[in-house]
Image (cartoon, rainbow, N blue to C red; front, side, top):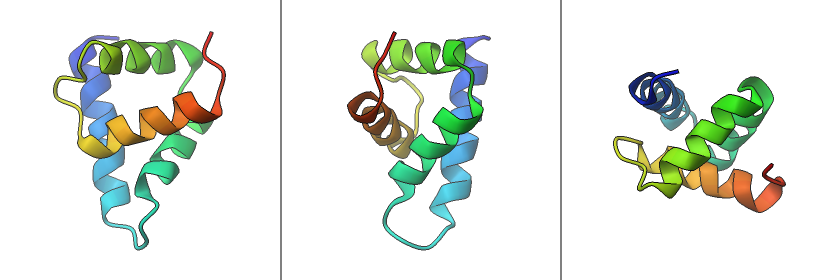
Length: 74
C-alpha cells in the first residue's frame, strides 16, 4: 500500500482511540494494529517509523514502539 494510505489508516485508528477514556491509548492502538493488520502492513509501519515517521500521529509512533518491545520483528 502507499505510504500515504498507511499513514492515513494508522492516524484514523489513533483518532478513534484518542476519544476513549484512560491513559493507555498507545497500548490499545498497538493491540489493535497487531490484531488486525497483516504482517506486511506492520513491516511497512516499522520501516516508516524507522525512517522518521513522517506524518504519523505521536500515538501511532508510541504504539509502534510498544509493538517492537512486545513482539519479535521478522
